[in-house]
Length: 168
Image 1 (cartoon, rainbow, N blue to C red):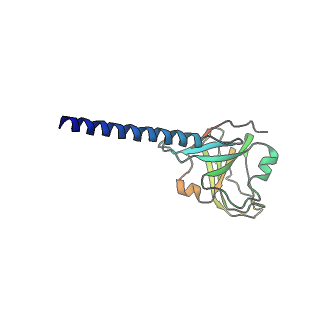
Image 2 (spheres, one colour):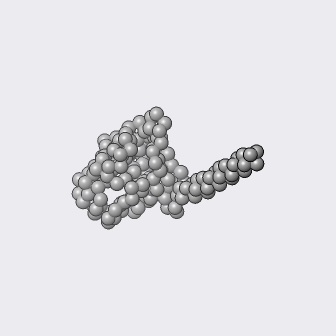
Image 3 (spheres, rainbow, N blue to C red):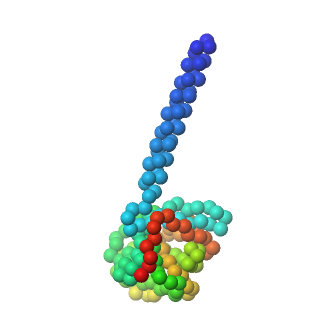
């Protein structure tokens, strides 16, 4: 009887080790898949209570030609993707949706990486100028409805992982 009890405990220990090893492998794979691709950074939001949003893979627009083109001529954007517009200094920002085929959420961000304001579900294919009426240094664009889904609002902070180029 003692031998069966010992075999049972050994079997349980081996199963626990196998599950732990599998968990470590999967966690490592997930961590690797969260590394930003070249020309991208990972970005997420943090609520005033410290709750973090899922991470987004953000295409970086740090030069004037990149910022001018933005997401124009695209037919879609992934649920956890977006674009970050980097500007050399804080200032008033306005955007239009000329040649942009998809509705977007726009998040205007201060130099301190705090949400300064949002525009939700901005309609595509219009030359109407869109602004929040406050200065910002960074602007983020996501698929329309993303910010409502996450509950992002003013006083939320923005975090990034990966090298951000200098804006020119």
